[in-house]
Image 1: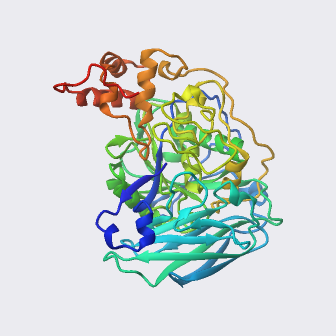
Image 2: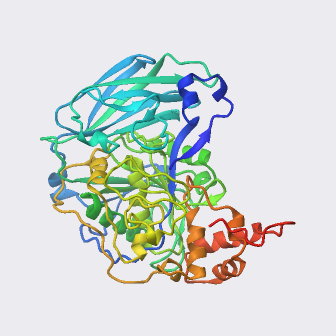
Amino acid sequence: MTHAILLTTRRARIHPLANRLLAVAALLSACTAAPNTLGLRDTGAADTAVIDQSAVADAATVSRDADQDATADAFRPSAPVTVIDLGAVATAATVVVDIPANAIGFHLTAEVAPDAVVAFSSVRSPQGDALVDQGKLVGPAFDFPMIGLHTLSLAVPMTAASQAWALAGKWSVVLEAYDAQQQPLSTVQLRAYVQTSSDGAFHGGTLDLRLHIPPGLQLQNPGAKHAVTLQSALRDPAIIARLDAFFAGLRTLYQIDRGAVTAHGLDARYATIGNIEQVAAALAATAATPARPALDVVLVNDLRVGGNVVWGIAGSIPGTASFSAGNNKAGVVLNLSASNNPLGDGLTLVHEMGHFVGLMHTSELSVVQHDLLSDTPACGPPTLPAQCGDANNIMFPIFFGMTAGKGIVTSPQQRRVMAAAPIYRGPSSVATTGALTQTHSDAPAWAAPTATTQALVARMLAIGLCGHQPALPVQSFANHRAALRHAVEDPTIWPILRQRARATLRALVPRAGASANSSSW
């Protein structure tokens, strides 16, 4: 469920704990959403914009805030997010983190030098329950190692078991860290970011969004294809449509409403992101933003992981949800399609935010892995999305449910993980949650739940659209060349799938002695 960067040059001499892990340098999640068919309208904010003229030209800030002026008081938190800064703590020793009584949830964030490795060896509740043991999360059927480069975060609660634990009290944490020469480090910077309320219960909230815009960004729909600049971004109808879809989905699914939206300049080198190292660098470049709870989003038109085009990627699961952005896991990158339905982009951002706060895919489609929650259905490969009970969950890897007419849902445990995230402000005036429902049908033909060869091939192409999810081998398509050629020219299917079909056809070269039936589907 995660994209792994292998520490092939360090693993041999690292501590035995790290050898038992998957030798992961960073936990990143890249995901995709098929074009959706939702007819959403967000009436909670006026389409106004204010330009901050005091900002410097290369890092100007544009603001669009739904809760300004007369309504601002209604969205102020009943209790602030609490930052517990433990400073430099000793590695290989038990560190106590005292969580206050009114906590809804919290994130632990450990930080070392940019080229060093840090790991949570053990994390236990005040009652002695293990959330992390021997360097991995306790409970799932697969290893989810808590190790990363430079920074690493852990969400509480994050698993089904941890949702039943009492949060308040003294948590026990043991950390490990190693420098670039594979030598143990004696200290790690440790902080706890605690989401609180006056009574320790979730009452909704508002999310501030910081958009980071490199030169050259282009969009269309609504309107013709055009350039999106820093100064025009939050007045741009194409950006506004995507923001409206994002906040409408966030409100409906998680009871978190629209807060301040600001746009910030980003260096032109990040207009195109071609690998995970560039993802990390782009997220670290968001450091110039104000220090306050918010979600940082880097907008690009071209995002690739492992050579594949992907829709979006979160810095890790969870990301480092600190108040001062600017490290290699401090946000998400969103690949804006110049021609896709804005609702697809908006709800992809809801999905990526889910990863950022600690949610995994409910199921993977090409490997047998599921999330850590007990109230989300599970599905295993090889399976078509239409056969999966979780296909309409917001954390399903390809958002098939939106085109199957089921609407999009979250589970109570997923909402509990979101409520624990220290990146929103609460409470808000939001009173209800529910499923996003389909109000009209403009789904492309490939997404319809049919058994035709063309639909099957399109779904096969979609399987590999998440950067952390293994794509099907090229030879899986060997018997479907005609369908691939049709997909390249078919204007009704998603553009990213046409691009995949074209690349797959190029890669399908005849092999001597190849089987007549080489499909692995």
